[in-house]
Image (cartoon, rainbow, N blue to C red; front, side):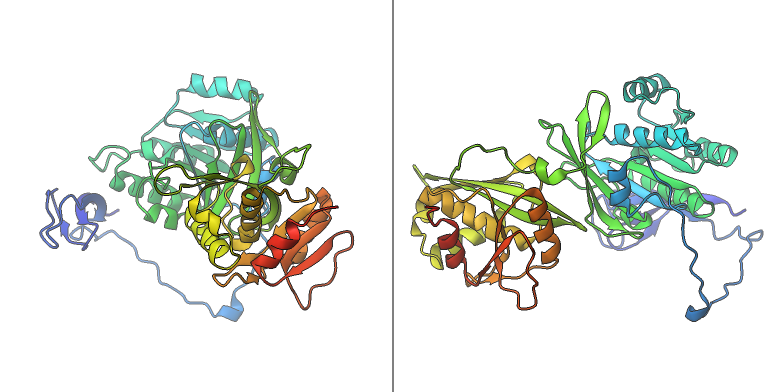
Length: 454
């Protein structure tokens, strides 16, 4: 086996040195040299090289992969139908959001069904993990626990137990003795993750890595960490709310941007089977500034209520504040309402827009609902509680069609909505039970949605 040594590689230009330096000799940048592993070139006498045999594309056979059910339907939905053997999944989230609770629940459920599970806790002791398992009701499940941070010891345990599912909580605290840098450094995270991924790809085990988030909201460590894994999941939610959202941003075995909804209770995570009702308010009276839209999260349509509030600006520039809505998108919609619809008063109004339950409206199909909610608040005229708006708004004020309209309409009908404002579709078949109001321009939508109900 080839000997291994540590080298330092510049993350800017790739220059390599054998010891750490403050400034890279190649690009003259400071603090860009990172410790990495490298095979020693002078000791390869006992290395074996396997001959690579290319295969013609028509001769490649596809074997149907049997996925493992995690015991949480929402989690399986986000993964694309279950846990794929030999897959690597990276789960990220803010501290205390519930990543360990989620993965320990899955580990307990899998162990109960007879699957071999190894849960490696690098941040908590065995007693702390046991207390969490007792709270979740999995204290008697045959999950193998290991409180360890040395990569070599973890690899040895995997070889000995041969588990079907491995959980590493978290990858930032795992270290290898080959490198002298501190745990959590770029070199340590990259080396440990690469070795674990290589080990999993050689066998049938599925690996889950817990990753920390930076203060900017990105996964800590090198960007290559996200390229190494098959699936990247973000566990998010408002700290003041009990609801948690599991979102996939990368998935080699299913659709991306799928969404799973959970409710955090004192006994652990509970799945929310009907999230559309969660994202709708329980208004008993008509209130100005409210409009419902249908957002598509992966393959799941979700009804979300958008609430807007306009208030006369006192001094200085008017404020634009959002929660769950892109601020740049809001500024564009306000400009369109001013210039194309004639709502000039918005230039002297503070505008606040929020989506309920903390759901982030990422796709432009929510434009029409947001614009109607702002106009409703400005004019002080409420919309109907049975109305829903779907559509993208262009800079000319034109309402543009969106994808998967029929799926959205069926979800709106199921929840009880009766009328939908949307762009005209020539080939769209009518959906029984819901009236479609074709809209070509934003001014038409505002006029129709705020029309008196008398």
